[in-house]
Image (cartoon, rainbow, N blue to C red; front, side, top):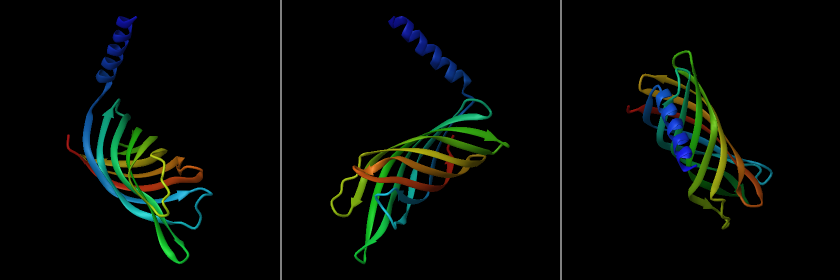
Length: 180
């Protein structure tokens, strides 16, 4: 049984590596336009933040690729309570795993899950956010040689605070460079 399992792993690994047309490693950064959606928070203003991180694009064919990323992302929102501006600042280490459909030589559409882990938070009132955030990412991109740009929308599935309906909603604009 153990030999059969190892053989299956070897065959899968070989087929993935032999089908991979190319692997690109790069870096990206950009601006976030973040807010929270849900009944738990009303009358919020968005938080303009940033994101920066690493990208790996694994070409499976001329038209399809898988793109995992590791991104630091400043998210949250702002609101006014009793005439005082309040901030909900939540920074994540996000791991999106996207499937890319490439068309017209340099355009692509991308979608997939995103797994977020809190690395920094500034909640007023002593509220502790959940440490994990599950989101879906959908977007589009362009590539010109080693340079690329992306527009993406991340919609949260999990509440960021226990017992409160408030989910992340982030629009991102990114530019990046593949180093190889």
